[in-house]
Length: 175
Ligand SMILES: [Mg+2]
Image (cartoon, rainbow, N blue to C red; front, side, top):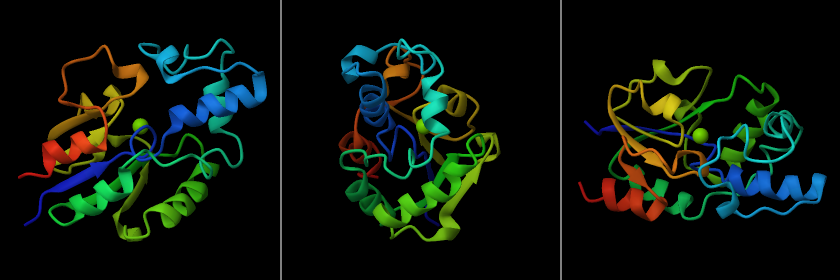
C-alpha cells in the first residue's frame, strides 16, 4: 500500500507570501521583499495591522495566488509513489472554499476531488506524512512531518525542513 501525504496549500502549494507582498504594495504603496519578512509572525509581518486577515477575507485573494515554484511538477512526481491529499484549513474564510477549489482545478487538475480535504482543524488528519508551513499543524501531527520553509518558521528547528519543492523531492522522492 502506498504511503499517504497531506499537502498544505497556503505557503506550500500556493505562494501566499508573494501574494501578500503584491497586495500590500497595491493597497498601501509600500514594497517589501521576502527577506524583509524573515522571522516575523503573520500578525506582525506588515506595519498595517490586520491586513493578513483582511486580504484573506477579500474576494479573489485565494483565486489569484501564484503557484509555489516547482510545486506542480513535484506533486505529479510524488503521486507516482504516494497517495496524495491536499489538506487546507479553509473554514476560517468561507469564501476561500470555492476559490481554492477553482484554483486547484486550474493548476492541479490531476488531483481528483476525493483527495481534497478542506477542514477547520488539521489534528484530525491521519496520513503517514504531512507537508506544512505552520507549527500549529505540524506539532500535533502523529506521523512524519516536513516543514516547508516560510518567513514565520525560519527560527524553528524541531521539524525536518524543506526550503523548496526540489528539497521535498530529494527527501521523499528517493524512497
Ligand atoms: Mg500553510
